[in-house]
View (tube, rainbow, N blue to C red):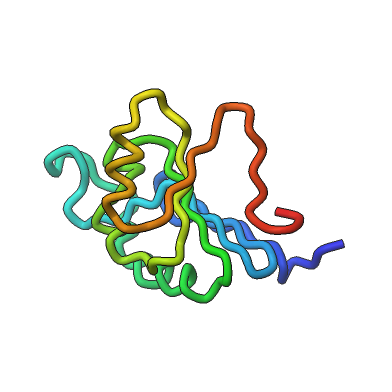
Length: 127
């Protein structure tokens, strides 16, 4: 049985959550851009820019760090944030037929894993 110290779910704004388990962290759809998305027409409400450095620090403290990005829209795929992520963090994306999103993610020099619709994927033992 796990303790509350081993598991943690935190909301960082918009669609971004972190889930930690043991020495593994999963971050979903991070969007911390101060310049917004879609030519500055969309912004986070409430603002969450001040969390960016804390989230980046958290990613560095975990032995296994993963970021799931659901799709390429700028409020889910914040390239500015991702350019600051440590290089041993793995990006997980859906396996789309069109590989342009995967190629764009790979241009960030981070490891990219594609997951099929019904595929199960283990981030670490028990997670």
